[in-house]
Length: 23
Image 1 (tube, rainbow, N blue to C red):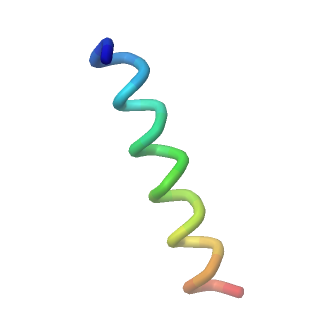
Image 2 (cartoon, rainbow, N blue to C red; image 1 turned 180 degrees about the horizontal axis):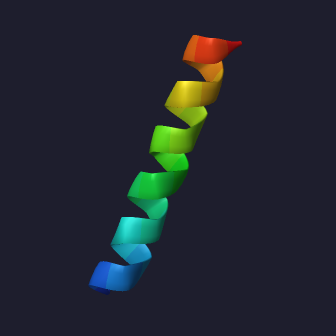
C-alpha cells in the first residue's frame, strides 16, 4: 500500500474519531 494512500486512510479515520467525539 502506497504511503500516500495509507496516510489518506489514517486522516479519514482521525476525522471520524473527531466527529464522533464532537458530536
